[in-house]
Length: 490
Image (cartoon, one colour):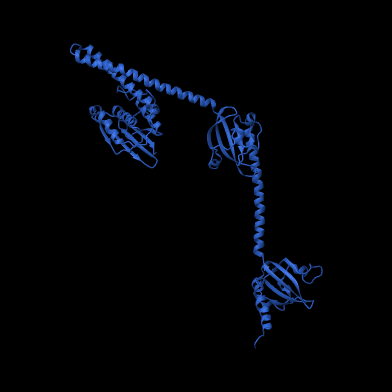
């Protein structure tokens, strides 16, 4: 049978449009019997059209329906009803929540039935309920944390007020939020004003303001305050504001006297170094003359001066040479702090070769075996590196070796440090004396009558410290001393 256009449109309207809309939809007659049930209604409820059509709508067991029908009962809202919410049970017995729209079906102005469209909002409502509970829990947690922060803030301010050091707190926009009593006594109450304007009398923020760095931890700086013309060590730390926001706490310790004392001490040290240098230089000339004259007397009058005369002359010569050694060591010790740093790597093996060459008579006289392995280059001036290695090597030869002994010089490098180790196998140094061997004019109890001034190891320690290194003294396995100097890689 061929359908005309009107019949085709009617069929499409009923069988396609109503069937395929994305909401559940059903129609009831005046007796509330279902006369139409679309595909989405089948999917949502589990009831097929065949199971529902001709049935009374109460088959859905709508809870609200049991209290009265919102479509036909008197006293119900005017039609249409939009966005009503109720509960129904699916064919499987599951309780779901639907959101529905309801209206009458009219024919020639008379009510002949009703239409209802609905969607399943169960998951949406469950999510809303979870969000509501979560928000309530979050609000409760925020209230508790806010209370804790406020209590912490109150305690912190109470502690800060009891301090003699000045302290203040500023917000992220550099406005003063708190001055403790010590701070107020100097600046007055300045809450809300810019910290750089009040404390440092500037029109713009300080160039090195530590605000951006405090998130990673406390920052310490030294600042001069114009108001009282004092110098302070300022510790900047992050703290929490009343709403949990980050603020900056600055605690200011007056170090004016300490700084002045340090500067005076540095000046005294400079004067002492200058004095030591001058004295060493001035004493070296006459002592050199004494040593030369004793040599001349021995050569010219050696045959005449016999017995006690020659012994006394040799004693004078020995004491003069000893004094020269002391002066040379003092001069090196006093100038170690003033040597300029270098970025040029120095061949350490070449320095060791030169030290051995210059002291070959002493090492060969004791028949000492010097074993040298490959050593790392160091960025230490050659003169200081020579003095350091010379002192460590000769210290091992003189005090750590019997006749025919052995001294080992080895080195190692890694990503952070370069080190040189000097090992001897002699009598060693008693444990109670090891802490003092790097002090000036200290000689160990095992040195005996061996020559030495007590300045060599002190010079080594001073040179190593000048280049941010470390020097360690350990016992050699089996007996003896192991000196290790380590410099950071730069």
